[in-house]
Length: 369
Image 1 (cartoon, rainbow, N blue to C red):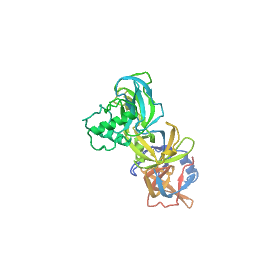
Image 2: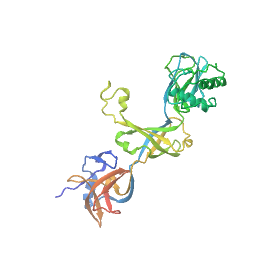
Image 3: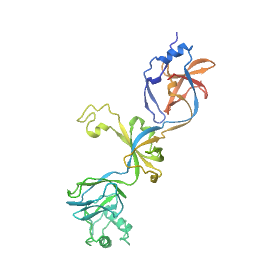
Image 4: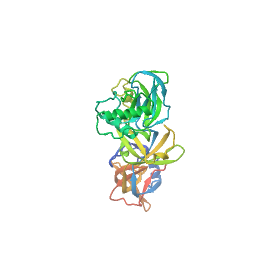
């Protein structure tokens, strides 16, 4: 007697990867109550579902956390006592106050090169260009050439105008402890020091971020194919509203335990059971629509890959064929027959199938759940 195929049911042990249309399935087929029901019904399955033709997506719903872009530490430029500090949640723009040391204000300027030295006449470099651009933007550097990286006499004059506007000593020089460069407007996430603390050069004073809202989420590396840079997403916010966005980046694989020194080769050892993770950052199409508090939990719908016009069946319609491979049970005219199939992409509880004997609208057997 020919051996019957078995329903896969929960015995699809793992759908390991969905990337570039590829698939991998490890199956541990086991005979179950569904097969006994089929035998009792004369070989017919307990239920059927149609073969459908249409678009199939490999999208995922993933939990993430609402935050802000580009978190970093601002360190003290010089020694002294902290006499004032911007509060948590404060938004600081160009020339705004970040903190004070011994009553001397440290102001924000825009630029990618850190403030690593005092700036004075004759100095050259990218940091000088940044200073000139900021002085021009603030209206103090009329006539300066921001592409000339030399601290000129005109630069010193512009600095004096800036100092005068803030009632500071008009030295024409900028101390290392006078300004902090950052990529743009900053939001204070937390204070790393308190008023009255003794600061030292390099000691953290503030944790800041950009003002752009983002979502951070972690994906198992095996599912990272669903998160491609530029791909559209839908973010469900606390309270039920939703907004659209894009995947800004999908970082390299990481092992969570490795970050704490507990990876397989680290001091903790035994970390091999943790899955590799990829950090994904999502930005919003309309950030102004995002009013939820920082660190709120959100749900992100990743579109992933979409296959156009493919045949698909419910995943639980798959059979593990006795001779190897996979198939479905086609039900026609009160009779059932097994049809071998090749599997494609999995998505939303369905699987892409190809096989010369399959057509849209056919009924395939599924177990009674």
